[in-house]
Structures are given as structure tokens and as C-alpha cells.
Image 1 (cartoon, rainbow, N blue to C red):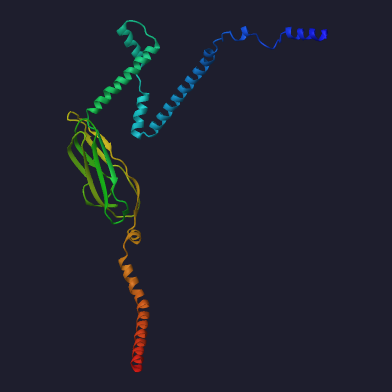
Image 2 (image 1 turned 180 degrees about the vertical axis):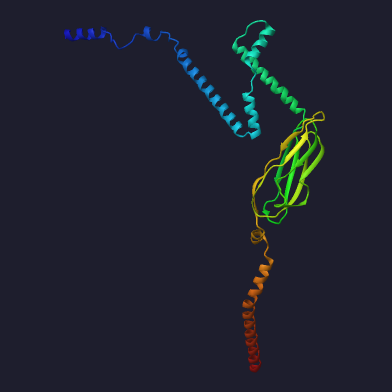
Length: 296
């Protein structure tokens, strides 16, 4: 009995090394590790968002450039290639300020000067006339020997009136088209800013087949003080198919004579059996009436 008591006392006095003390665990202050761990993540997220924004800007620019017309693309290329000589800009800055400047300052000043010159040129263009001419074919079907209607619409999108406007369309040769009404050459004395005017032309194609409808030429003065003639061109309707008259009539005409001929041809095949039927019917009805009278 004594041996068992001593062993129990010894077990109760020994400490479990895996069980932590209360003072060491509960009252310990946690070390601030949250900020040091989130700093790399925040910088990575900012870098990713910046790359995403740059990618979106590049895609938008690609879409914009792909939708440029040939004239707009040429102007954009000239704007990108044009630049002021950096050596001249540097000498000018040093002459004005009296001190040497770094290359970054020269680049910044040349960029600002380029933007300023672009705004001056744009403001000067806004004070001049700018004509946009739209040429279009109004017919749904182009038929040989039928009227073909061409419409020209002139828009003045500039800030001044256009003077001495000449519209010349040499894309309809006499051997291919006959002029019914209208003129291939038109002259207009003045077209105010923000105004528009239309001109129509009726032609008759002499031949059938594919024909390329090209643009017409427009000349005008951009302002009352201008002496140089501005030359422009209308839009191009493009290639169109002129259908032969026989094919068009075969497909779209009412075919009245064909229906009349069809009716005349089918009349005997329908009329003769009807007459025979009506004759036999009237004969049997007459016999029935005679038999009924004899019975009475």
C-alpha cells in the first residue's frame, strides 16, 4: 500500500512538457507581421492593374487607328514623324535662360511646342471652309436602259463659307451612259458654314455588266481671303452590277401578256369539258321532268 501512494504522488508532482504555461501563452503580445506580408501583395496588385490599364489603352488605340481613313492615317503618320530639332530647341532655351539644361528638359519643351503648333494649325483650319461631298447611287437595282439616279450632297463642316465651288464628275463616259436630266458639271457661288446642298443626276446605262463608280472632283476657295484653290474628292459608291433588261423583266415584271397567253391556251381544255357536262346535265333534267309529268 505504501508503494502505491508514493507513485501517485510522484505522478501528480511531475509536469507535462507538452502542456504550455498560462503566463507564456495568454499574455504574450502578437508580433505585427500583417503589414510586412501585405506590402508585396499590394505592390503586385498595383503593378497588375497598371499593366491591365496600359493593355486596354493599347487596344483602344489599335481600334482607333484601324478605323482611320487613308487621309486620316497619312495625317496621323505625319504627326508622329514630325518633330522639332532638339539641338535648336536646346540653343533657344540656353539663349533665353542663360543656363545649360538637361536632355529631358529639351524633350519636354519640344513636345509642348509640337502640341502648341498642332493647336494653332487646328484653330486656323476651323476658321476656314471644309467641304465633305457624298456621292451615292439611289437605285436598288441597276438596269440596262432604265433610269439611274445619282445624288451628290455637299456639306460645309468648316468655320467659314466656301466660295466658287465646282463639282465635276468625269466617271460617266458618253459611250456607256446617257444623261437624261441634270449636269455632270455643277458650279455654286457660295455655301455657308454648317450648310449643305444636294444635286441629283439621272442617267441611263447603255451597257450591262460590272461597272466601277468612282469619285467626282470638287474645287473651292476656303475663305474670301484665300487665293489657293482647295481640291477634294467625293466618296466612291464602288463597283455595281448593271443587269440586262431582259433578265430584269423576266424576274420582276408582272408578265401580263404571259398570263393572257396562258389563259387563252387553257380555256379550251377547261371550256369544252364544261360545255359537255352542262349539255348532259340539261338533257337528263329534261327527261326527269317528262317522266314526272307522265306519272301525274
